[in-house]
Length: 159
Image (cartoon, rainbow, N blue to C red; front, top):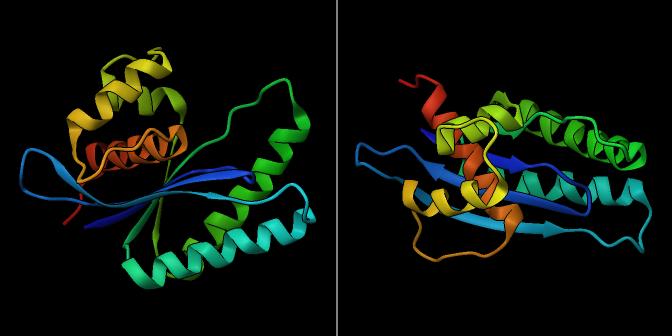
């Protein structure tokens, strides 16, 4: 089973491709942080996100999308933009026949650290211990995407 895991955002989108293995650690095939510029119109940023996902899906051929559910913050403008970007992500994955799995931040924290109120540092320190990473990354967005993928592999039963 190959998972496309996404930490949604319209300025920065964390992306990870993870293969389920029979080994103790699953394999990180690819990870990246896709960025769009605030200098271009928002609708163009959404188009770029959709195009990037189309390219990744064609290249890596994942079977499922694991994506974080949004939670409300005090900045409604950011939440709305991320919601719209997330919609493009889910639509693109669904249009390409991927199974869709969504996880809340506490679910991700429980799957990765065992505690639903863990801080970000605890999650980030556990990710490399749970997955075979050929190259390490310091990008929070990539590590978040990897954590979401780990959550999917821990929670779902795949044939």
